[in-house]
Amino acid sequence: MPHQAAPIPMQQDPPDAFAEQANRDPLAAVSVYERLKADPNTSNATKDQAAEVLHLELAEHGQRILIKYLDGEQQAPSRADFVDGGNYFEAALGLPQASAFDESRMWFFKGRAAIFDRQYADAVASLERSIILDPDHAYAYNALGIAYLEQVPSDPDPRRHEMYDRAVNAFNDALRFAPNWAYPHHNLALAFSEQGDFKSAESQYQDAMKHAPGYSYLPYNLGVLFQRMHRLDDAERLYKQALDQADKNYQRGFVPPVFPWIERADILNGLGTVAAARNKSSEAERYYRYALGDATGLSAAKYNLAVLLSARGPSPEAVDLWRQNINSTDDPSLALASRIALAKYFDEVVRSRYMAAAEYLDVIKIASDNLVARRELARIYTSEQRFQEAYDQLTALRSLSSDDPQIAEDFADVAARLGRFSEAAKAYREAAIGFHTKKDRKRVERSLKSVDGN
Image (cartoon, rainbow, N blue to C red; front, side, top):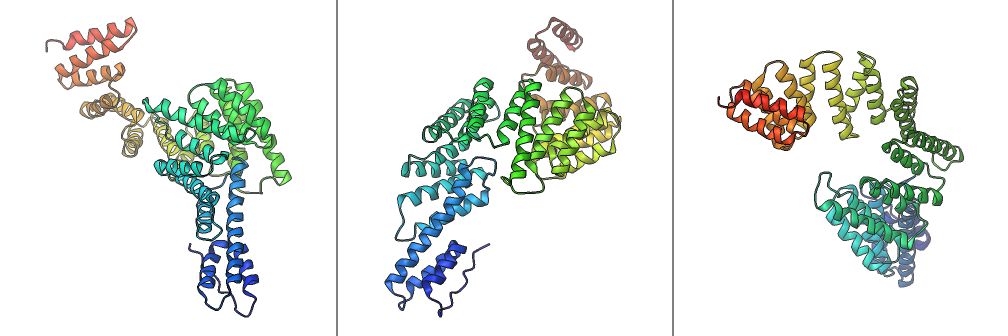
């Protein structure tokens, strides 16, 4: 909402009243200063003093947000914080005391806010302007690395290596100016992890933990990395270390008492996934329920608990948990995964192909390129001898994954049932080339003989 400046009673001494206003809300005080500056009855000395006070308060409020950012991710600033920071320093640029330092910080905040909006071109341009104006501080380099890292394509693409390299270089630049800052170490670890360089990622997390031993998110993320490497004992040890640190931070007031307590819930969910990987179902369920006790809306814990419950047989609670995720806008990827899991549950546990197909169709409405949903729909339609509908799904699959020999074989089978023998023969030949095992090739070649010449 726009700031509404409260008028300053003229019977008060204007400098004192203005200082109080600027300290309380410097952005609202800007319009008050403009009125003072335009007032012919206000002395130049008073105007100069008001400008100095306002500049000091704008810079101080912006600096508080920057310090929060420099602390790392444990209490990360929000998009609104970065927008406010940009506004503080943009207002400071309109004052006689404005400096290149103010402009640099304004561009930093604007760039960091643009990352939240996925406006990466604007983010990079703003952050580079910030660096040109003030090249000796780490924070803009770190934000620039985040902008590049978030742009890494998810599919094989020549730009993947380029974006990773740019991100890594930016994080290393941040560490040149702030070698003990945990946040760039953490971001470097993420970059290395996403590239599959787990050894380098582990090293960066260890460095980050040395510099910021009080942050629970660091051992938690290292635990996630260990779990990806199937080092379950190490993952459990790091999760428990993170849980202990989160509890200590709460007790010492390092983090304010909040609900939902996402920090702790994520860790408990992680411990649940380790227990589930060890087939300790009861222990995993306990951890998931503890996690939901700290954060009732945690989609990951709901998903994991639903999977666990459904593995035991029919479970209305599992359906309800998946439905909650599907109807939530907090995590679109988990909403989609929950709908796919629910469809699989209807198919395999409830034995209702109709209900399963309905869920898979809803997946395709949301994500038309989802291979799992289209493949499962094709299987259901084929089993029900709805060959034209299976053909339509497999045609779409072939366009999405043209080098998958199993999709080619499935398509050929259905095409043959529809009397499309030339299409079937062509697809069987593609499948025979794509399969690597002799058993698969022989099966496809037998099918090819049955349609060749028709």
